[in-house]
Image 1 (cartoon, one colour):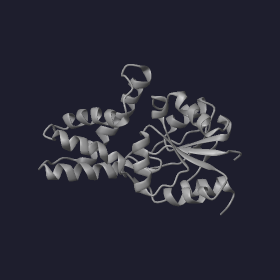
Image 2: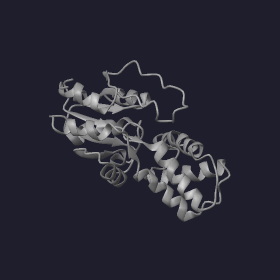
Image 3: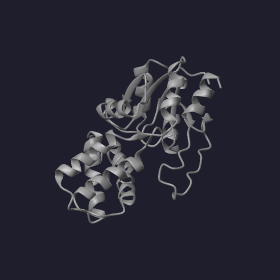
Length: 236
C-alpha cells in the first residue's frame, strides 16, 4: 500500500487486555479474601468502556483522563458483581492494570519488521500518553511515536482524534493507515479520511466469545501484525 505511516489501536489489537486485567483482579481479590468470576468482572468493566467514551465525545460527560474514566467504570462493575468490599487503594491499583497489559505474541515481532522499513509507526489509542508510554515499554512494543486521543482532549471515535494523528505526523490522511481489530474504530478512521487495516483478534473476549464479523469496507486485512508488516513492506 502507498502509505507513509501506520497508527495502531492498542487495547485489543496489540495487547490482550482481558487476561491481563482478569489476572490483576484475581490477585487483588485474593489478597482481599474475595471470590468471583474474574473474567466476567473484567468483561463487565470493559463493556462500560465504550458507552463512557461516547458520553465524553457527545458532551454528556466532561473530558477526563482515561485512568479517571476507568476508575468510574470500575466502581460500576464491582457494584454490579457485589464486590463493594474492594478498598480505595485496591481500586486505584486495579486501574493501573491497564498500564501493564501483555502484548499478543505477534505484536512486538511485527513492529520490529516495520521499524526497519520506511513506514512510521505510532499508537493511536484512547489511553493517555503516560499510560501508553509505560505499557509499550513494559510490553516490548517499539513504536516510533506515542499518539493518544488525550492530545485533543477527546476519545475515539471523534474524527478529530484521527485527523490529529495525520497532522502531528505530517502525513496526508489518505497516506495514513489505521490498524485495529475493532470494526467501529476502522469505520470512524475511514470517515476521517484514513486508510484502514483489519487484524482479527478472535480471543480478545476469550475463547467462548462469539466471533466478530470481519468488516467489509477496509483497505486490507492481515492475519496478525507480522502479516501486516509483510504486506506493507512487500517482504516474506
